[in-house]
Length: 241
Image (tube, rainbow, N blue to C red; front, top):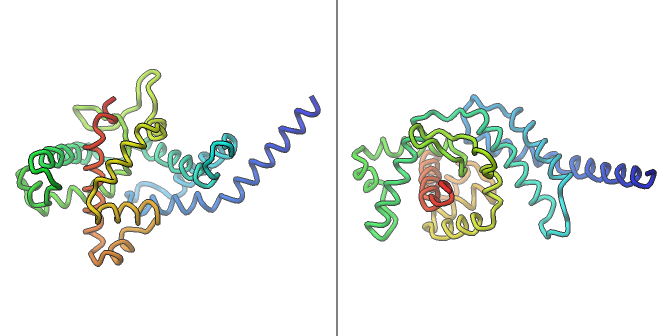
């Protein structure tokens, strides 16, 4: 019994050390996410959720699985923050609905044209102006962190999985989904791949990406929103399964 108690104390100390060494990562990820969320989402809420994710990562990390703790913890922290954002459910119904309509329009045009459709082509297909189309992309980029939430087919709102169905975060960890997502990103035009890399890998904000590409922050927001919808369209089977 004494030996077991000692082992648990040592293990807990190790967990505490991991949390202390990586606590700054929680704030960094929270600030990165906050840059594309409405004012109603508070930094403190994201940090609190992220710290819970970090604590869980410290308890569950297994170094024999190959991934570094920073990589593993980053996934858990983001997942916890995404769960908190989903719980707050601040995205208006209209954004879900219009985003779903644009995603389907892009998917149809890709099949018809055999290439990536231009913004003007998507707008014309949907019977709207290019400015209105761009406004939807901006709304999606601001309001939607990419997720595979299940959605109500009538309202477009995300809802919790029923029964023993896996949560969206658990689906994100599925190797098959990760492979399908990697393939979908690899099929994007070079410029869109660059935006994804700068945003998610380098963690630049939209203004900084605009400076790299030589375009406005608003245009980067539109590109980001378009990519989100294209990826959702390509991963429909995963979203609806």
